[in-house]
Length: 216
Image (cartoon, helix red, strand yellow):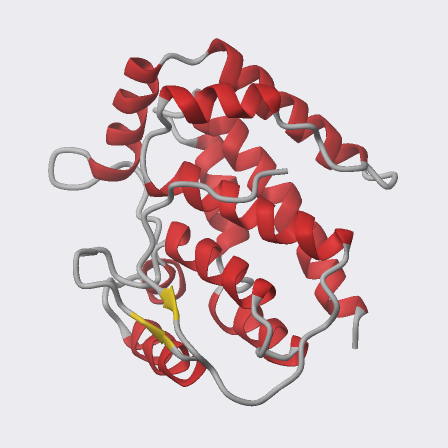
């Protein structure tokens, strides 16, 4: 799929110590690139280049999961129909708004109902332990959905972070809430292009939950 996306992220990889890495096979590459794609789409309104890219990326092998295939085709079609201006307005209404957007894409909000709450403190401790550090020019808290998707891609792609740590990070900071966020995104009043992003994200997270639970 995609190898590098120009996403705004709140975590940057640094040197970590200890642990072993699973060999990066085709499944891992698809997971990395899907997380990066979601991070890009959630971090900011997509540019013309990103919309064009959506139309050009080949879907991964379906492996019998028709839901993922349908959601991917829906996302590609949404990319063909969207304009930069319309998607920019949509992103503003969904995530920024006048005071607040229709949705609040933060882990703390979804798990406790408050921003900057205890889950964010725990996340920051875990990021530090993994060797990630906050970028000075990023103002968004680290539990933003885009930041967590990008961080997950970096963890999977790391040479030194073991698989069990990868699974624990997902279960502790992503799996508990982001599926509900993607469902809410599909039902948001302002969502048009982003309805397909929500569908794609929901299908991917369902598969990710199954994948991580299977490899015990």
